[in-house]
Length: 67
Image 1 (cartoon, rainbow, N blue to C red):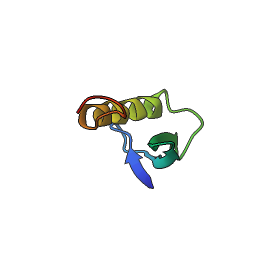
Image 2 (spheres, rainbow, N blue to C red):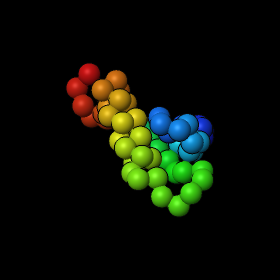
Image 3 (cartoon, rainbow, N blue to C red):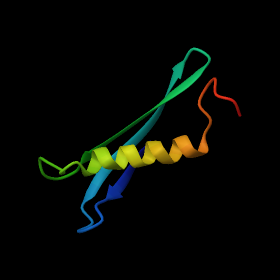
Image 4 (cartoon, one colour):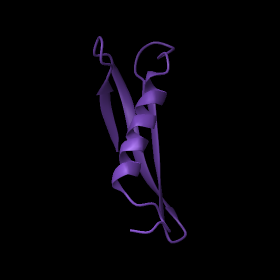
C-alpha cells in the first residue's frame, strides 16, 4: 500500500509505502519512503519512516515479547 505524504513546510508530495512480508511464524513489516520531486529530501523521508516505526512499536507487541 502506498500513501502520499506531504512535507510540513511547503506540502511537497512524497510516497510512503508499507508492505507485510511473510516470515516463519508471522510477518515482517517493510516501510520505505521516497521523494516525488527533486533529488534530495534532506533526511525527511528517513525521519518519517523512523517516526512511523516508533509509533507502531509503541502500539504493537513484537513477536515473542510478553503481551
